[in-house]
Length: 141
Length: 141
DNA sequence: TATTAATCCCATTAAATTACTATGAAATAA
DNA sequence: TTATTTCATAGTAATTTAATGGGATTAATA
Image (cartoon, rainbow over all chains, first blue to last red; front, side, top):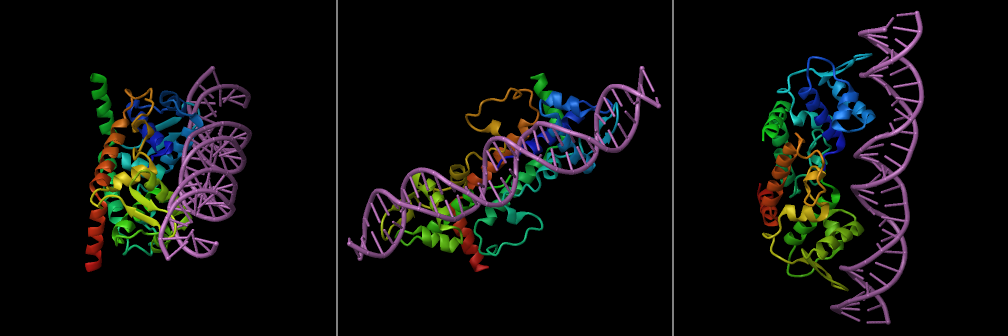
């Protein structure tokens, strides 16, 4: 039941882009340095964000990335689902899952559904803007 | 963010013992047949439940397992934590985790903590007795 | 136009985890 | 004493994770 580095790093990349937005492109190298993670690995992760249209890239010298929409727009859930896949705690709850033969006899699927709902509720409620706000509170205290 | 078969099977084993309790020992072979999972694999899982004192074993012919306490006593959370380990979505929230250097600067740990709380709330609220009850409702409908 | 700095793309890999499988010893009822 | 069961430990194939590496492409700039 762990979120992988891929998902966690993706959230941190998006937040980094939001926090350091000065109207210019931000390079992977900068993000990697600030977040202290492998540049090459971040490259892969941000490529997923790029293909999904969450960030826009500029190639060549002085290139880099920026968020396409406002920080209010992106929820942690969107980012995690994109990078981690479904957040369902069991495969049979995934959208488009081939239905399990025990489904109607299954006494446990109910808990997993509740768990799934609880997880979704949390991650879909928090946006990048919320995380930015929290940071400000941290700095003040 | 998946619960492994180990954790899921453990819940099913415990529930199977609760549902099929007739005052006698229940053999792994029976449970494996009912739940349609590998006997040998279940043996390993139930051994964890045994060592934790959740079930009691009787060795030899006519041996088997039974729940130590009432189904009301066991929450899904207890069983999952025992078999899966901590349900924390990130390692730094685990009890006894060596603290991350970025902890105080970390803008994301807040969401993970909320997620952790939400997960714990669900799994700690549901007991085996609740699952037994749900099953009855399923059969009636 | 040449250089430099960046993204883009694809392949590889070491380590860990998952989900078993196998073997055989030890205990106990009949 | 035999059949049946748990107990303990080791092995293993497949998958996933978390990267690393090499090189092609693009674009600003000197």
